[in-house]
Figure 1 (cartoon, rainbow, N blue to C red):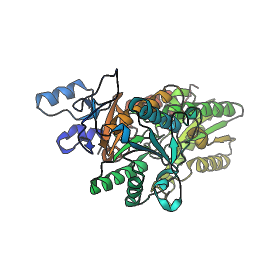
Figure 2 (figure 1 turned 180 degrees about the vertical axis):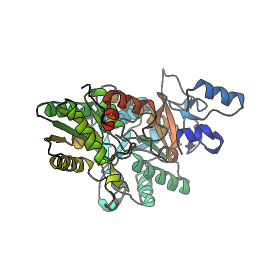
Figure 3 (figure 1 turned 30 degrees about the horizontal axis):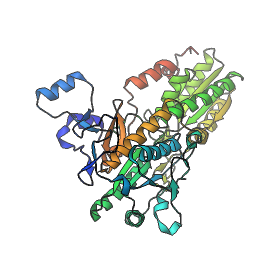
Figure 4 (figure 1 turned 90 degrees about the vertical axis):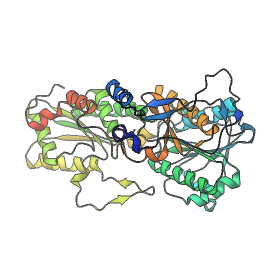
Length: 445
């Protein structure tokens, strides 16, 4: 189920947001423009498409708009909020935690805020972790550091046990910060809560550095990851330039979607070949493309490869999964380094490869610039949704407007680069890699 599927068959999909009850309490917020549940964010900005919906009397497929509600469900004086971070690290985790604490504390007057240690493990008593009391003093400067002050983990926990813990702690709003695996866990918790008819709001905040969640334009950490990746690519370019037939090979994050590699390639303008999961390639074709570049007078090259690219080249490898159920990718960076060396040795040509794998460095940095601002805005939207009694949803951005997305839809399918779309066309236009693969390339860089 993609955004395009919904636009083509809107009547088949229900994008409404569940609640734990009707909000009857007046919001304590002052001097703010409130958002109504009737305000919607369209899934399309195409005027012709919108015209078609109006002419056929078809409701425009849209998401509920995020923002503070005039009436809320949870009484701030009695609210006990939990915050949890799961999965791999990502720039901005601490910024989101700080934003949640500050919005809960200052905008709503919530005084009982708890950090759950080490992801969903922290909700399973067998691990023996104690909740961490959070307040504005505790989170005052955490945005300056990468990682998460709460710790994280991968792997599933029994939803029934986790809900038992929430009820034992009297937590009635839980904020789950994580990617698709975390959000699936949040959905399972919400389903268990609903089964027990408990008024506990479960709110997801999208943390996937790959920027690949469905119905969400942008996830926090992505912009910082691209910025950090460009620094590494620049170093790879310098290294490649310093050796005859030098090759700077940079492996970047992107298990199933190559957005980081594509955007970083565009941002640096020194990448000659960009490899992403969405566009298959052959080893022979890649090696011939490099030969073409070197044979046409260039003495260096730079390749940016997403970690999930070229997995079809490992057809003899059994599938492996991590604790969260994600398919573990074979190491395309090490593989290409070895195979390219072998190829050039076999054809009797010199090549000097400098291989860079900055994955842990990129994901463990703090959020920077507008990415840090985005973290706080997502946190604000999450708190507004939680206090209003929304549940089983994730806050996101659609067409640059903050919105509420049912978790089930956000994780239903990964967002990917369209090989025929404008983004990939721009990458091809900047790298000119299709010229190298065709054997005609006289590179411009």
